[in-house]
Length: 185
Length: 137
Image (tube, rainbow over all chains, first blue to last red; front, side, top):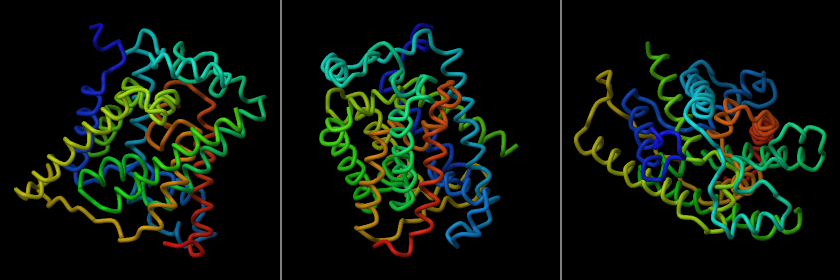
């Protein structure tokens, strides 16, 4: 049982994500989470501002149900399938994060500096979350997919476009971590 | 019935995102510093199995559980949109430490500040819709 309550290693997690991809294909759907952001825009009435959001969102209802499942899964995973959510990071990562001011690295699931509810009164923390989210939402639609749509579905289908997108993901992530983090933290 | 199946697949996905720590900001940071194999192992093993699954489905024309053909729609050919869009996505992925699947998982795990990320991501998608025609694709 301890195997379930401990964090799952990559060789368990990877095949389970592949199983999700397989199950979705077998019910006739393509694995891609970021389209839900567009669907949410449409539900909020964005079709009045841009034709990009004029589509029958009910055709995407299934994907919103998957999202609802992902939320429930997060609840089950954290409440019933975990003893301790601390992430066992590499010691060098912990040391590096400590110098950047992240004191809970190695002891928590997410940095308390950004994801504790005290962030709601911290302008800098809020800005980091908001700008991060903004880039994710803008970039993923511009690129036509995210980690699930490109890195998993697209690469699995041997699509060149997805390989280019994944190279872009990494170029952006490396730039942020190595060049921009030292400026903001 | 189908709705229940989608819900169960989503639950499996959410639990896996949480338990694999792919939903952890820290793991994304560690990945971009190349200090752990963990995230590469997850993505790599998923893709290797994914290639096998999709190639098998294509080669043997395996129908869906409902007997319908499984269709793969290739993405439009382009370099700029994938590279520029991907780059912007990557900046946000590293900063917020979450991509569009795990950010919902974190809501369920009770990290309320992730709602700021989600609302901003919806807004970012909206902004893209507004300026879409002015961008190189």
